[in-house]
Length: 203
Image (tube, rainbow, N blue to C red):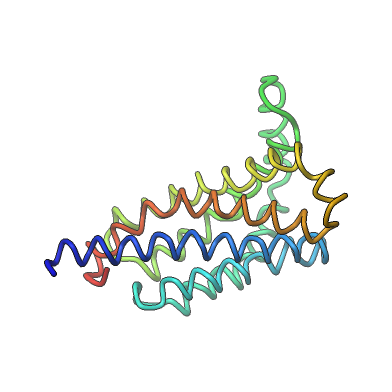
């Protein structure tokens, strides 16, 4: 098997593992958010996503444990950072609402998650990735992915939260919203996976 073919096979495996991990991790995170509310949102989402990312990247990056811990421990800290910037954040949300495009909950979620993810992505990039292009790409994709997580969750909930709650209660709502939202994040951030082999020589 040529090096290029081997690279393609391993990238494909990594790609689908990445998507599946975020689907499952997001679903569990969503259930915990629905069940535990404040604790789930501010603490346990980072635990779920950090754990699945660390597992998928275990043999791909140099420090997978640190990579996961950055999300696990940094998620609540980054949430506190977001809370401390709420005045400026609310100004941004109000400005977006004033455009008349989309609705308030969409903008609340689509702006909150990128603010939380961006500083974590910067630290992850410095600790776990090689090459400034890959590091920059990871940060940019996390900002975009954060918009997708928040916006997709708000969009799906607007149409399906009520029927999902009637059908399966909080578990169904959390699983679908979390799974779909973080699957969207996985699709966006998967663009960086192809560069890991270039920089680390492992994929």
